[in-house]
Image (tube, rainbow, N blue to C red; front, side, top):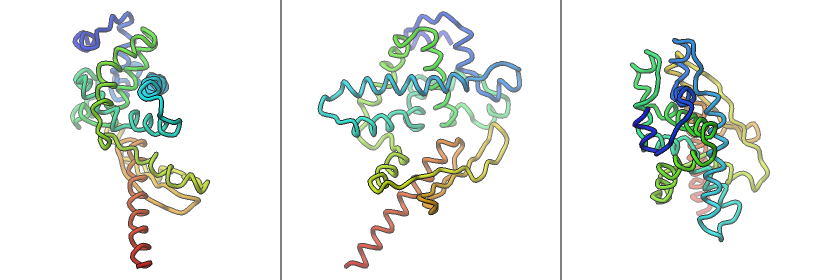
Length: 231
């Protein structure tokens, strides 16, 4: 953990808090300790604030809608996974035996959740100043390097397509399979009760993203067909 703190140049006071941030539920269940799930919840909200402030200061001409789409892009699971990899977060995680054997240290959903937990713990330990140190090291540089297609938030794209018609999207988990360290979720997205797409993932977030991607592909195919008929 010292190497991680040195990487961020953070003077961490509560080592137990940091340890909890690095504790996956599989390890927590095996050893009777707290997992990082509550810190993940907090970190999600804190990261929204920090990224929003950063984007707000980037360009005074960016409108609210543009900022909202950009924020969604940079706090989605794909982006969070890249932030975690940038600080080699997987190396420090405490995993249960099953999760360890199945390659949990490289699993995107697990890394994304752990990064949010780290942010939540940093906020509790050192306030926004500590979170800013993390963001300045691995979040903001990756945002600056992004060329427009690195972090794709399919859910936001799909929502943008349907919101002008005031239609409702509904994501529903239709199945959940496997042990806790190898979960597979299947999610369907409906548009006013019409099935638009289905996706699978190791987390509910990823399954929703894949369902939205399938829906977008379906809409694109429909546009091509309609265009062909018109011609």
